[in-house]
Amino acid sequence: MGVNRAQPRYRALAEVLRIDLQAGRYPVGSVLPGELELVDRHRVSRHTVREALRCLEEQGLITRNRGIGTVVTALESPPGHVQRLASPAEWMRYPEGSRLVVLATDEVVADAELASSLACKRGTHWCRVRALRRLKGRGGAVIGWSDIYLPKEYAAVAISVGKAGGYVYEAIEKRFGARVETVEVELRAEVLDAVRAKGMGVKSGTPSLALLRRYRGREGRVFLVTIAEHPAERYTYGFRLRRSRDGSVWLPD
Amino acid sequence: MGVNRAQPRYRALAEVLRIDLQAGRYPVGSVLPGELELVDRHRVSRHTVREALRCLEEQGLITRNRGIGTVVTALESPPGHVQRLASPAEWMRYPEGSRLVVLATDEVVADAELASSLACKRGTHWCRVRALRRLKGRGGAVIGWSDIYLPKEYAAVAISVGKAGGYVYEAIEKRFGARVETVEVELRAEVLDAVRAKGMGVKSGTPSLALLRRYRGREGRVFLVTIAEHPAERYTYGFRLRRSRDGSVWLPD
DNA sequence: CTTGGGTAAATGTACGGACAAATGCTAGGA
DNA sequence: TCCTAGCATTTGTCCGTACATTTACCCAAG
Image 1: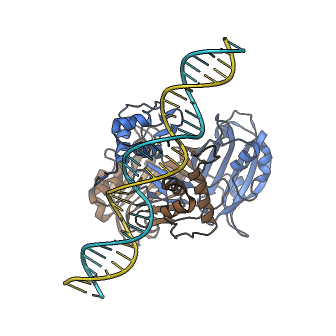
Image 2 (image 1 turned 90 degrees about the vertical axis):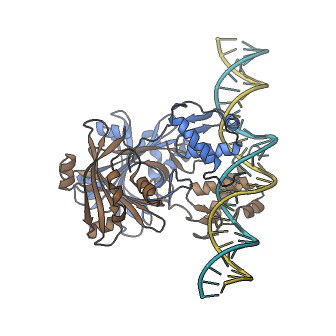
Image 3 (image 1 turned 90 degrees about the horizontal axis):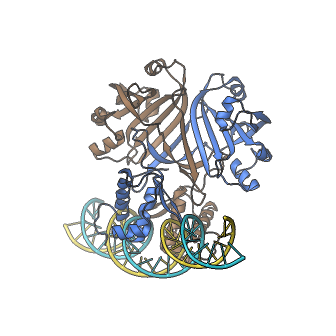
């Protein structure tokens, strides 16, 4: 059993299924044959089938739903050049850790631009917490400016921002019994406006990394949006990836 | 068996082990008890133990080595606030795909600044390929500028840049029998210099997302470095994450 | 027509066993 | 001394089985 094969069976099966997928046999949104069906077809154990499906799941090609089946979510990743790295990555790791220092809490009404960022209608009311991100320790350097937007009904958690550990979204989950299902992240370069530049003590017009995170619940409801600005001279984001066992994906190191 | 538990056993075990780790019982670099040992200690099957270890592996806390054992690689991620998202993420997905159009290939000698980017000594010689990234199709918009640096001994693959699909690092692997083990990614905001601004047809001084990727082989040897610039007005990087089954990590959607 | 329960189907969890493959170490021989 | 063969240890792969949990669907009762 399992002697001297170049590739383990589950990986070979994953490869076969991936090729089937990309050949159009199972379009996006369709349901793959059940695990037991695959057991019969390929004459392997269910364990092997499940390992194979796990491979495809890690590559983001399928999702598995109890009671429903295994659904195809993508056929493949577009052949970019060097760009496309399927990469588990820690998002935003600060050297030594950092903390938020709240500057102000107020209520704002979304204008056109803000509405686009918050994915809401113009005129919607939000609770906004403005804060500086500093390195830990007395007099720690300011490395960023965060604006945290909460829907009015969650405004109560505003006071917990900057308090001891834990994420804002976790505070909302705990307090209101909701659950964040997805996060949308947007990243772009900007030049700092005067207010934020002054608040962080850098020159107005400094290039800055703008990082937006939009937390959504089950039906797409927006729970929380944070917009962080990091001046180039104060902060560079970096991480390292290593190859997974089978070489198909990149993992954080 | 397995009736009405709030949490499956493997996840509970993962939690226990994670707490042990963070309590300092197994310092970074140390070897965890073997799987069979954990089977005895916790009175569960090896399958359950392995699932638990897989959880910890996905969180980046351990790595498992056949014949050696399970090694602790991290105790935890520093307690940021909203920032820290353990997140498998597709890195750089362009809308509709894009292609590289090579502008020039030349040889450069690393000055102090470049040496820092390329993680080499000053005075080292590199083969540099300069290229524009455009959306596909005739007259596709220019969305970025890439500088690709190759060590002199790999200069032969320079001609394959921009040619049909596949990554540059894969070309190196195939041609020279090497294997990329890790990738370091650095991200920051910059203002474009005159040359690149002109090349992309934007105003000099435009804010730009600078993305550096440093590919390394087994002994840390640098195989390839790419530096991509994306003007803010031309490109925003975005992706979506969803929660993993057990809620411990974020996966690409 | 709506609501409820029951059933079938699908994946998830968990147990058991066995052998393969990689590594580190040791003992023995050249 | 050095090198190799072999052994013990550890994780990887693969098989089998059973039951739990979730979901979709049908059908009967109200």
